Length: 84
Image 1 (cartoon, rainbow, N blue to C red):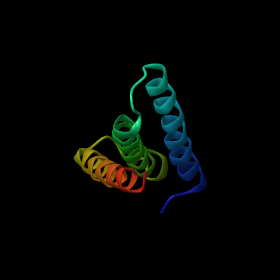
Image 2 (image 1 turned 180 degrees about the horizontal axis):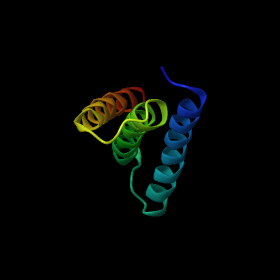
Image 3 (image 1 turned 90 degrees about the vertical axis):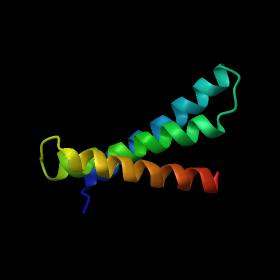
Image 4 (image 1 turned 45 degrees about the vertical axis):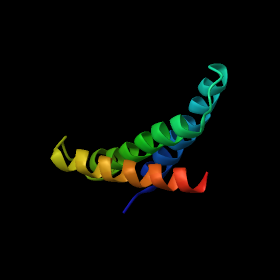
């Protein structure tokens, strides 16, 4: 379960990544579709893992953090890639 702080953190990180990545790609005159999907997927996945492990349960860095972060990153990438 996620609390209010975790949900706010995940939404903020995802939104800021979308804004920054799109603007940087526009400044570099490249298509923002694939870089936006990859970078936002990674940031979203690891922000969920960070919220779950450090904000909600106060665990230390462990192997499960990287597993959750990687799985959530892949899921977020495919969701962004399919619906964009």
